[in-house]
Every structure is written in structure tokens, then in C-alpha cells.
Image (cartoon, rainbow, N blue to C red; front, side, top):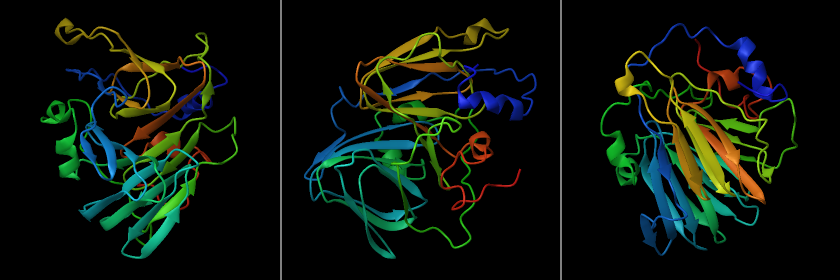
Length: 303
């Protein structure tokens, strides 16, 4: 359910009938409150917090100048968000070293790679659970010991014809009211860097909706938010869950599981910056012409 001026309202006409699917069990939300938790890794490179969903792992780092973050045998492509314009990093892969400026998103190929902080600042790295060392290090790893009842097993999207190479993209692109946010995708992730909201969200223009079979990770980079979740009633009252209204400062993540009906309200008086993360990428967003800003670099699967 979207406001008529919300670009996502056009998705409804393209949606495929979901059928009368009835979920037999529910899975609760997960929070990573990095602003109040102790870092899970604290060393000469900086402070890192790690939390996860079923199909992804988020590593939020306040890096020190000269700090380095290496992957020796990375099994699949991972993503890096550099939120601040003042932050700059070097990313080294088998093909060489590239300087990536702040306010960018980068996709790093499998194998050996490293990120070196040219300045102090924050970076966010996104991995799939194939990075078992990070998945096990997550603060909420125990929540995902078993299968998720409503999320299918992760399947990566196709590689580009020329193979996987380091790619990076600036977030400094003009706003477009016909497009929802600033969306980039790779083989493993879709990142939607939403237009920042100045001040609280209007209470008469919220967007309650649900996803049948994929998670949403809402990453708060600045400001404060309340994530509102409601689970549909079924004939089995034993699986009903109470509504949730989860107040989160930043930095933090909220993992919203399917099929929870959800919407998020910005609460802060200043800049409220939210980033929505999906693993693997979403079909519906990808099928909208012009929504995915790097759509020519990564093919879609056939379905």
C-alpha cells in the first residue's frame, strides 16, 4: 500500500499474482544496534560491528587511517558502501589497486582482495553467508542456526559476460521522482541508497507493504527511525505475533523478515539516511526501466 506519489505504486500493476499462500510459521525481526553495542572486533584497523540476516552479513566499521581489511579467499562477490564524501579507500584485487572516493558503492570480486583506509571514516561491507567466518562472528549468529521458514536458499545472479571485476559507482546522482532511490546491484546484492529525509516523516504518507519470500535489511546511517512490523493473521493462532515498533538510532540495522507488513518512519529533526539492502537482488525493482543505475553492467536471470 503506497501513497499515489510513491514510485513503488507502479509496481502493483506489474506484480504477478501471489496466490493464496498461507505461511505455516513466522520468523521474528532482528536488530543490530551498533550505536549502543560494543564492537565485535576492535584492533589497530578500527572498530567493527557484525550482524546478519538469513542471506547476508553486514560489517559496519569505523576505520582508522591506514587500517586494512583483507579477504584472502573470498568465495563470492561482496559490496562496500562508503557513506561519507570525506572518506577515501584503496581497494586491491588481482587486477591491481583502485582509489575509490567517498559517497560511493563498490562491488569486489571473489578471491584475494583488501581495502585500505586512506582516511579515517566509516565503511559498510556486505557479504553472503558463504563468508562463514563473518557469518559465525555476527552478534545474532544463533538466530540463523536453522533454516529460515519463509526465505528460499540464496542463489546468486549471473556474472557479467567479461567476468567479475572491481566496479564502483558514485552515489552523487540527481534525484528523479520517477525512480525510487538510487539503486545498484551486483551478483549478490541490491543496494538502494534512499534519498535522505530531512526531519520526521509525515504520518499520513507511510507505505505499509510486505514481501512474500525475501528479507529487507534497513541500514540506518544517520538520524533515527521507527520500524513498524505486523504479521498477518492465519487460522493458526499459535504462530501469531504482536506488532512491533522498533526505535533505532544510527548506525544500526533492522532485518525485516517475510511476510511481515512493514513501514518505516524517520524520527530525527536533522538528516535521516536509510539504505535498503536485498540479497540476492530484487526482480521487481530490476524490471523497472531506469531504476537500477548500473543495470547494463550486471545481467538479470531468466525466469
